[in-house]
Structure formats: C-alpha cells, structure tokens
Amino acid sequence: MSTKNLLDFEKPLEELQEQLEKAIQIGSKGKVNTEKLIKELERKIEATKKELYANLSPWEKVQVSRHPERPYTLQYIEAITEGQFIQQFGDRQVKDDKAMVGGFGKVDGRTIMFIGQQKGVNTKMRQYRNFGMANPEGYRKALRLMKLAEKFGKPVVSLIDTPGAYPGLEAEERGQGEAIARNLFEMARLRVPVLCIIIGEGASGGALGIGIGDRILMLENTWYSVISPESCSSILWRNWDNKEKAAEALKLTARDMLRLKLIDGIIKEPAGGAHRNREKMFKVLKTEILKQLNDLTGTDPSELVRQRIGKFCSMGVYSEKE
Amino acid sequence: MSWFKRIKGGITTSTKEKKETPEGLWYRCGKCKKMISTTEHAEALYVCAHCDYHERIGSREYFGILFDDEPTEINASLLAGDPLGFVDTKSYADRLVNSRKKTGLNDSIRTAYGKVDGHDLMVACMDFTFIGGSMGAVMGEKIARAIDHCIENRLPLLIISKSGGARMMEAAFSLMQMAKVSAKLTLLSDAGIPYVSLMTDPTTGGVTASFAMLGDFNIAEPGALIGFAGPRVVKETIKKDLPKGFQTSEFLLEHGFLDFIIHRKELKSRLSLLLELMKG
Ligand SMILES: [Zn+2]
Image (cartoon, rainbow over the protein chains, first blue to last red):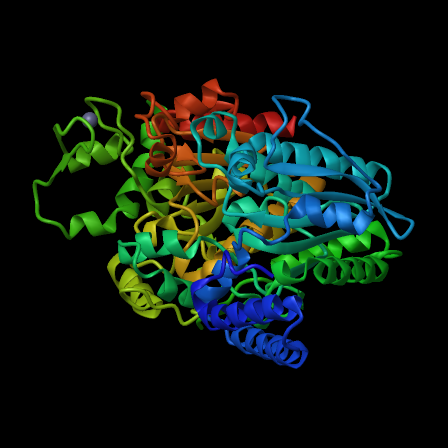
C-alpha cells in the first residue's frame, strides 16, 4: 500500500506505514529478523484503519467517496463480468458522451445491462471523462441502453458516481433538464428489474438521472444528496468554509439515507475504504448484485413497476393541520 | 377584449392584500422601470404596458386569471416537516414559520380545480414568494395528490412552475420529489389524460429536470428564465459571458424544448382551445 493520496484524517496511518516500509527494507537485507515486527505493524495498521473508518464524519466520507484511487464504474464492470462485457457507445442523436458508459455484460451466466457515470483515472482521463459529469447525450445514451434491456427482458444495474450533471452551455442548449426528466419518467416504468448503486458521489439530479430503481443501495463510504456540501455552503452560508457543517446538515451518508428510508441498503466496504482492497470490493459488489437481482427476478413486470412507483411516492415528510 | 371582462372579477377578489396598501399606488416595472398605476397593471394581468415584461405573480393571481369562478382548492393544509432538523444560518423550522407569516401561504404550491371557459381543469401553481418556490415534500405530495384526483375524475392537469428548484433544507427528500412526481406522471400518461406544463420566470434546477419538462405540452410565458443549471453556474463553468437571450423561453423554443410561448393575455383563451382540442 502506498502512502500517497492519504487523506487528512488518515495521518495516524502514515507513520505506521513508514515504519512498516522500513522494517520490510531491513528485513529484506537479511541481517535482522523483522518478521515479528512486520506482523505487529500490519496488525496495528489494520486496527487503526478500522478505528479511523468506523468513526468517519460526513465530510470525511465525502472525501473518501472522491478518493482518486477508488474504483470507478468500468473497473467494477470489467471485474464483475470477468471481461464478458461489450461496451456500447452513442445516443444515436448527437454524440457519444464519455462521462456515461454502458453495455451488456455477463455475470455468473446472467446477462445484465450495466450503465453508469465514468470518472477518469488520471489527469488526462479525468478531462476526457469530463470528471464524471454527463451531458444530455449521456443521459440519452443511458436511456437508450435501458430501453434495449427492457426489449430483451434483461435487468439493469446502474452504477452512480458523479459530482453532478454538467452545467455547460451546450448542455443547456441540448436540454439537460429534459434529458434527466425523461430518464426519471422512463425509468419509473421500465418493465425489467432496475438496481441502482451509489459507488462514489451521488450528486443531485445528475445522480438521480440514472437513479430510479427497485432497489437503491449505497456503498458504505459514499454520499447522496440534492447538492454537494461545498455548493450548499456557498449558497446557504454564502462562503466555502462551511462544507463540514453542510455535509453534516445534509444527512448525506449511507447510514443517514438508510435511516431516513430513502435507500434500501448499505454495501460494506473493505477496512479503510474500497480503494484499499479493490479485489475484495469487486467480489462484495458482485455478490450483492446477484443477490438483489435474484430477489427481483420473477416478479410480474407490472407489479414491479407498481411497487417502484409506490416506493418513490412514499418519500417525503409533511403533516396535515386540522 | 372579452378576456378582460372574464378575469376582472377574478382580479378584484384575488388581490385582497393590495387594497390594504396606501391609495394611489404605483407599480414600477422590474425591467423598463417605468411607472404604471397598480389598478391598470392588475387589469393588464401584471404585464407591463410599456415593455411587455411579465411580472412574477403567484397562485392567487393565476387562479384569478384562469378560472371562471372561485376554484376548489385541495390539500391546502399540508405543512412541511423538518425531517433533518436542518440549520444553516437560520433554522429551517424558523424559515417556514416566517415564510408562512410573510406570505400567508402554507407552502410554495397550491392545487385547485375548477372551470376554464367551461372546461374542467386541475391547476397546480407555485408561489415564488415562499422560499423561492422551492420544491420540498409538500410540493411533491400536493402534485401527487392532484394527479390522483385527475385520474379519478378524468381532469386534465396544468402545472405552473415558478421555482429556483430544490429546497436544500430538505436535502435528499427534496431530490426525491423529482422522482416522485415524474413517477406519478407515468400513471397520468397511462390514463391518457393531458398534462400541460407552463413554465414561468424562473423555472430552474430540479423542477426543470423533472416534471416541468414532461408535459404533453411544454409551454412558457415570454422572457422567462428556464434552465437546469442557473446562469451564474453556467457562466462560472464556461468562464465566458453568456450569449444574449441564453436560457430564455425564446431560446428554449428555438432549441426545440417548448411547444409554444404564450402571452399572459392569451393564456386562458389558448388553454381553453387546447382543452377543447383534446376533447373532440
Ligand atoms: Zn416595463
């Protein structure tokens, strides 16, 4: 494990890791037996990781959800399908949106339509992927693929990871609002099972635009809300300094969202976050997807749609005065 | 000018609060800054006589303009909860109390049905004066119930949007109202009941990215700001000045997202023609 890309709150890990690296180096020279020390340090690191990650503040979780080494949509799909995946491009109208990906894949003998926002893995790719911010074409591509899944009776798995729909000039010209709205409408009545999983950032309409499903799950260290903590701070507090407070107030963590009954479940991440043990994370996600799809399969499509609509219609807190 | 006679009764009953203000009141146009007497301005349906600017008006005024008689309001007593105990520089609970006191409204939308030139119509109309017309659980539930009523009674639906978008103080609950109303609209659509979405100044954010754009007929008042991202955000993103007329009704019409633009003076007559066309 590298010491780069450690988040601020992970500082206690840094020193332990340096010690560990030193011990390994000395051990490799063969003069001193450091085996016991290495074991001890590894145990300490695991324990520290667990402790740190068990008590993350909402803002710290937001940071983990954006960790540059976190797995992104295509990496999950490739791993889960073991390469039995064919990516499809284009919305058939304007262009191909690199911030939104999708295609059929096979998981344990079962064909699934995967869609999701895609972030870039390095500076160049981040730009290429527009930082995971889709344009209207992206939402329309996703809808095209979902309708294809419906046509062939295949379930849809939507992997959500976006800092928002792109607020650009062309996006407005080509109807960003309409594109998202159309997806909400069509996803609500899609006659196949739809499973939505927040794997990183779930920011606002950009996330919801591929987020209407029979089950909504969040990975443990992700966030989902109507606005990012930074933007919320700048609008409500009129400065950027209250992002921690905003993160707290928005109740955007998986635990909060489950408590508020706005999602259906939380998928546990390996100790120290998804990025520290990708292989394990892939395995956990695959198991969860198969479990959920097994639960949903067999339900009559009309009943599935009825329940899906009912689920979203029950969301909201209000009272009725006499 | 038959439209004028029809709405005149509506106006005098619908602007009670204006009577309490000092005599000889003048309205200063928000666009051209010229003065018009408030009576004349009201008679012109709050459209500037000099520059045609459509002043922002609320549910009371729209109900007065549209309905033949006093409509029947439904679910008027729904009140917002505060599920997150949200506090920023003020508490949400206090904001709600203040807004209710200031506006005399319970929340940012009212739903009512009645006759429009004899045609039945359900109207859900937003009030921008109530926390910027923001969308919280009350807005979602009121529209959802209005849709239920429309399906049960086979009434066409008109939603008049005027909103800055999500109500941040309800966070994810607010976001989910987009899903809720959009999902409900599939049922209205299945029932073959027409839905007209009228976008007025401003219609942005989550309202645009959900039900406002889902009308069988998407229409707008002239010169309204309509968009997903606000112009300030777009400007910051592209780091350039925005082209003239960007995100106006006319811009949306040109780009294919509106069926037509409707002057407020013609709103009732065109709408009633539309309802007539849907009948035959
Ligand atoms: Zn004027």
